[in-house]
Image: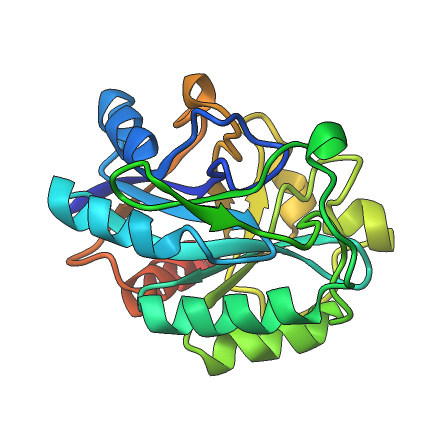
Amino acid sequence: MLYRADFHIHSCLSPCASLEMSPASIVAQAKVSGLNAIALSDHNCAFNLPGFAKICEQQGMACLYGMEVTSSEEAHLLCLFDKLENAMEMGARVYDSLPDVPNQPDRFGDQPIIDENEEILGFAEKFLISATPYGISALLEMVHDLDGLFIPAHIDRQVYGIISQLGFLPDEEFDAVELTAYGDPALALDYSIVRNSDSHCLSTLGDACTEFDIDALTVGNIRSSLLKSRAD
C-alpha cells in the first residue's frame, strides 16, 4: 500500500501551534490534504496522543504516535512509535525530566490537553519548549529500546537543527534525517531522508510529506523502507 505520510504535526498542545490544531481537526485536514498517514509530534510530551489515537481509529486514518524532543544540545529530534503505550512511556520520561518552569500562557500561548471530541481536559503545566537534560545519544538509545524511530528534525534549519547546534551531522544510528520541503539533500550525507510539514496550523499541513510503499504502517516496515532507500 502506498502511504502519503506527514509525521511532523503539532497540535494545540504545543504553545507555538495554533489553537485550531485539535486532534480531530488535524485528521480532517489531513484527508483534505491527500494524506493517508500522519503522526502527532508535540514538543516534549505525549498528552494529546490518546485523543489523537481515538480519532484516527474512528476516521480510518493510519497513524504513528510521536513527539519532538529537545535534547540537552537544544537539537529537535523526532521520535515516532507505532504503539501508543510506548509513546506514552517516552512522553512521561521526557516531560518529567523538563525543568520545573511553568508555562506563561499570556507570553507563550496555552498548552491545552484535548480529547477526540475537542473537549479540554486540562493544561500542561511545564513550559514545553524547554530542553531536556538528555543528550542526543541517550535519547536515541531510549527511543530504540522502546522500538521507535529516531529522526533528527529539520536538519537544514538555522535554529534547533542538529547541524546548527553541533556544527556537523554526527555518525549515529539515526533511522533517517528530516529535511524541510526544499532542504538540500546533500546535508543528509548517507542518511535516508524524510520530509514533513512541521505544521503548526491547518493551512500548512501536508506541505511536505514522504511516500512509503509498504504493507502496513509499522515501525519495522518503515525502518526497512528507509534502509532500502539508504542503500539505493
